[in-house]
Image (cartoon, rainbow, N blue to C red; front, side):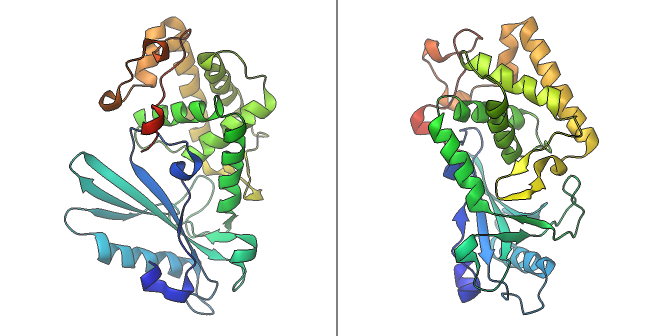
Length: 286
């Protein structure tokens, strides 16, 4: 991309779970932000033109050998086939507010290519600061890494079991942090996770509940879900809590271990009293 766009693009950077150290070893992907200069696509260039130009470039470059390039909500997904499965890269094109301003404030406008909750297709009102989002997660997770990172990873493992689920990982990260801000999150790992699940269950259907984007206080992440999707999320949390309360063994269906990297240490196994499995330190990826 830097070869293609030259001086019109700032250095693309990793914005996802690898950068935040919240990756799980059951999903192999990268999130790559591509920050463009304000006039990269002409003085009157639109965000739509930016998105489509990047999509066309990536499609021509990588949609070969059964690899797949597809347009998504705000990103462009590239899936590479490997001997062990797939590796996915999501490229998020963004444009600085004013020419040559990005290095000073890191603020970007994103393009809504497909309807994204309450954000309509074609909207250019999604303004954010990816660096602020990264620092928010990293700073908090570093300070309380024995709880926050483990819970975020477990929620992402659960999300993966749901397939194409509308709730984004960033949403789960922020609502985990908000739980820690508003509740007394104590006990063993299951106790803490349970408090987070209950907090999600009880709050996401509340119209007054806000989930503020640390990259732009005017963005409410609740707007990324429609009303029925909020209700479904709440229902999923309730059902999960009820089933686990009925039988500890049900934890395994909601938070399955990756058999390829199965943890043999019994002290780190399933069960509400023994804690819950997370990737071993050298396998915190994916």
